[in-house]
Length: 158
Image (tube, rainbow, N blue to C red; front, side):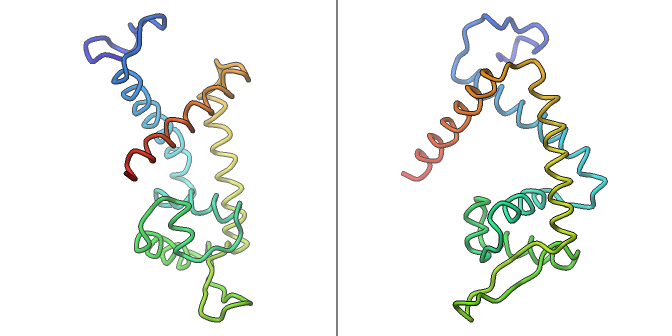
């Protein structure tokens, strides 16, 4: 989307510059965050905590350093977030059965319940966001977004 063309006037068949694509991607991300954020407001979660719940639900117990890596944040950020979530009763620290020096973070029963609520919120927001796309469009979009993300990460790691 060019700055001089309002999004409601943007013709879908118009050529898309690389700038147009990244700007559209940023606006789509912003709209998605707002849609999810509005529904998360009633859960008591702080921004980013829903991602911690999702990752722990998927991976199970993770040491803070590994959790930070899968969330793509710094370890102090993950530490502070998990401390806040522990105080809220969403996660707990557990010692590793194989290495007494290792401590993992896992979901409590309340955390698991809230993680499922977060999944439902993302499902509803996703259905609204993608309502006009076919299953094939969604597959292509997903693959393109993963490619863009991977490419940008590769460039920043040089």
